[in-house]
Image (cartoon, rainbow, N blue to C red; front, side, top):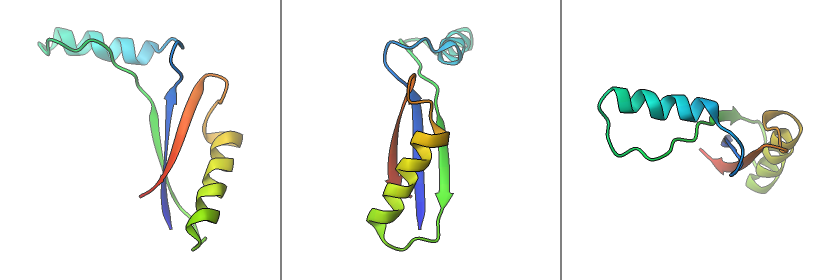
Length: 79
């Protein structure tokens, strides 16, 4: 089963990468970009065939390793 974990900085947390991207887009002529938040996407291919168990395992992986839950939020979806 394939799963996708999307990790993003929590609201209110500084996102220097997002700010740099927003500034670069402006200098490239892309007007009207008010804000950019940069995160990461991790795709997992797991042996589990039960969707609920696979999702639970991916959420545990995210909490333990893939996301810093103090400053990042995550969501898990089937890919």
